[in-house]
Amino acid sequence: MILDTQLLYGLVGIFLFSLGLSSAFASSALLRRILAINVAGAGLFLLLIAVAYRGPEINPDPLPHALVLTGIVVAFSATALALALVKRLRETDDD
Amino acid sequence: MTDSLVWSIALPLSGAILSVLLPRAANGIGLASVLGSLAAALAVIWTVADQGPLTYAIGGWTPGLGIALRADGLSALLLLLSALVAVAASVYATAYFRQAEQRQRFWTLWLLLLSALHALFLAADLFNLYVTLELLGLSAAALTALSGQREALEAALRYLLLGLLGSLAFLAGVALLYTGYGSLDISTLTHRLSPGLTGWSAAALMTSGLLIKTALFPLHFWLPPAHANAPAPVSAILSALVVKAAFYLVLRLWLEPFASLSTPELVQMLGVLGAIAVIWGSWQALQAERLKLLAAYSTLAQIGYLFLFLPLILETSDETLRHAALGGLLLMALTHGLAKSALFLAAGVVQQHAGHDRIAELRGTAQALPATTFTLALAGVALIGLPPSGAFLGKWQLIAGALQAELWWMLGVVLAGSLLAAGYVFRLLGHAFGQARYPARSLSIGRQEIPALGLGLAATLLLGLFSAPVWSLLAGLAPAGGLNP
Image (cartoon, rainbow over all chains, first blue to last red; front, side):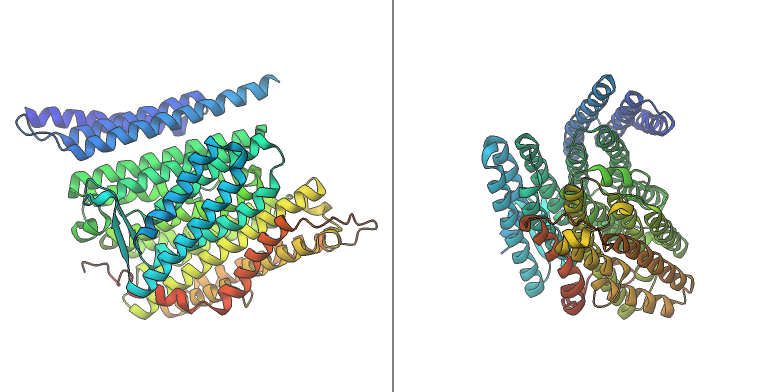
């Protein structure tokens, strides 16, 4: 059962990652691409969290958790920068 | 002396923070921190040459959870290149930006970019490599957008999004490697990795992510607009160093952890993509109407040359051949780094002087800006690979290696690439040396012309005539067939 839960999380992570990646390449709308990259990132973090699980009695592996935390911070800043650039682009369009 | 590893990263990083706090002193802070990091890079390469590879565990934490830094001949050489180009481009930048606001923003992002770059060259584990790749991508995209013009914003956004996709693919590979082999340390993985599904998928994901970032054909389309629309000192460092950082990772990964996965077909394929990049990039540079676009397309071709070396390095059991080819590769990379930054800095001077950089209208440049035109010519000599530039020796090694490995098609590629390069360089010089009836003589702008000239001279004379240390620094690096044959 335990292994099944871990496997399920891992597979969902891989699914989200592929979904986000394919959508990021397929669509041309900027906002959509930024969101797609975020979905792919979330899938990857889910996969890493699933990897860290070692069973109900043992503490999870801390290293993947540290990676996910760092990854979230990086993804957050990258999204902020991308959105700021999109906003500036819209403003130059309006002028 | 292992402290110098930390200083080369910490000095630009603290400079970046200080330049936010004291915006008026940004020029001084910036110059002091790049000079300090050059001194640290010199200390690193001195120690590596003297005692061999260096490692340092930050804060005394053991690698695994802690962050380790490592420098061997390969990373020390690239670190020194980066610190040198950074000093020249920084001196240039003190005179380039006219608006105070733009100048302050430039320094903060610029110093962040440098500390990310230096951390990337010195990182000893895969997750730090991911973090430094992201920091590099973020600061590079922000610097590209610095002018605030529409084309620059569009190029920066495309650069950022593709860079993010590249680093996500890289991170996915890192996650797979940790799942499969329980470590992120590069040297531990080198001993543990064996051919199999996990290794293969991780190698495919990480390499394709890096190929986007290093702009290898056919993943190159983002590079020309980004490099041509950034401010001149930024273009110099993007073209000379940032694409090379991703190439360095490809090389490092395939020399160490992925060495046991490499197959002749795969390495040949990378070589063939490199060959297409050489021809395509040079051909596009020949057609380019703007000087900065010419420089950007020529970067695509030069990255192609670096990939041409891979079949000679990764698929040979002959130790001397491998060592010779690795030295040639490094010499090509170093020469291109110096020459391309010289070319972009000189292009910036031309653009500020003439108000445009349309090649067909550059008549009279040689009369008005003799030193800068000389720099363009020096950079051109290095890009074509004429003696005594470092690229001449690099191409010599490439041809010698190709003959020995019986890869005849490479000879044609090198020949065609060099002829096309001669074509685009002489087309540029032909226009620049055209006589104008009323040449607009400029007053001395030494602070901008001298750094570019220095880089051009280093690429053509210094590297060509004193290149033996490159090979001695690379001795003993990653023996043939990986560390676990």
